[in-house]
Length: 151
Image 1 (tube, rainbow, N blue to C red):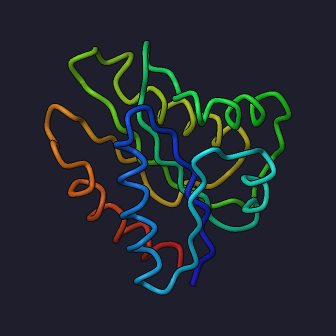
Image 2: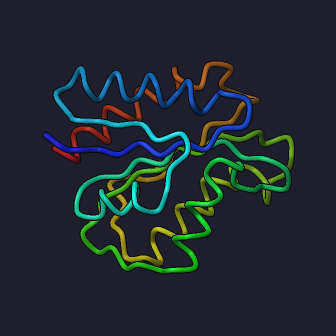
């Protein structure tokens, strides 16, 4: 089974709630999983040969939440190539704010990880608050597919 670091960007707690359920589900399926709510670059790099799952909401003009922004900035500034990293992204947003802002935090993180040569395990999941009032409900089917691919 995989060792998975779950890195959370949350403004009002929604992404953190999804992450808690995801970590619980990962563990129930035999994976090792640890959640990071104030992740550092060192936390993230510890998984560079394993699996990282980024779960983030979007704030402002399609930006990354404040608690995840230092990690994003450090990865962007130091640009450590990570070809052995397998990753997934669950992006949360609200499509009523416009297509350019919708799930912007997750889209930006996904793009950066691709630039760092990490390998996406499966397509990013974009959860629209206008459609899914329970983000956990939307995330769990995607997670099942993700878990199959990281065994």
